[in-house]
Length: 89
Image (cartoon, rainbow, N blue to C red; front, side, top):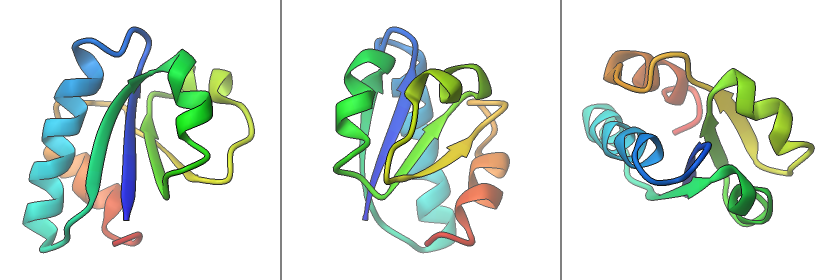
């Protein structure tokens, strides 16, 4: 499974979300290849992943992609990420 974490610039927030996603996956006993991206690159990258983790505001900019798009409100919350990923892994 491949997961893409997305923020506006792809520098800090998406990396933080990537690290917390990896923690959530570990807590769930699951594994995945997790990559971080900015919104511009995410439009293309989302076509090659299974899940995109993104904020509500940026989800609208992402457009229609074949990946499952999961909106995350608090990128710092491993619990929220775990709850939203659990049905998918």
